Image (cartoon, rainbow, N blue to C red):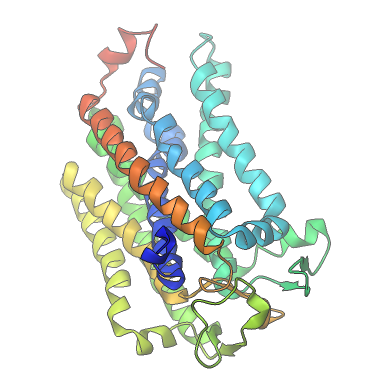
Length: 387
């Protein structure tokens, strides 16, 4: 018996669907508060010392947090190469904008305090704002478009073709539902950033963060509720016709897909997945309560639960679909027909089983070492080491 026979192909496909979800949730929970803090920077800090406090709450950890982004992108490329290829073809300009915004962050962190110039520092502060707000918004817009269905079709050679020219493919992403999803994503990460500042900062910075976070938390709840109603009554879902071939070759054109009245039929088929949106609402509501009452650790944990529930809701609602096609449902990519080979998934799983615990252990150790609040005395008294 060869090693790959230990786990069947269909089980490996589900495992990698779960693992990619874990990596994306890990990215949102860690780099998410980095982006939220950056987007909050111009509004929670009034003086240069306060801005340095805000920056230094994430300064020691933001680089490590971005590992989750790299891991998530790498996992999608290796586990779902067709998803990677098709999504980049359609979202190329949007992804370029995200990467450009993310590139601003490390440059702003490194150069912001190099000159004692108000104009210089203000410019980099707004660069941090862009580096936090733009990716948070576009990630949500992308999720909204995936729920709507992406306008692509596959040729018999599995080459993707999109409707419209290069610019239209980007502008077409900015539809009302996707913009709502973008607002939800941005508001959720602003709330997460506020929870982090409540934990790591003190004084006026923490108070302003709590006030803003309370408002963005309410926006998150309202946006999620509106998106749920919209999905229920205004957006068609997708379903595989007949019994899905879970252990067959990775060719989407071998499956027959049809549109359904709504994505929420998934909750009739699998009622247990309702736990995900319940956790999403519970987490955000309790995070708002924690911000209002000045709680710290529990507020951040509740915010993380809200993120977990929100992302899980999307994944569980769409399962087994990953990237549905709005113009040719039979071209839709699913867990069962867009993955790498059996051998590739198995080798990746072995590598993940070895290295992911190491990453988690190291991350936990870093956060334990850096535990504690950042004060103005810390940054003004350590100008050579602090940002």
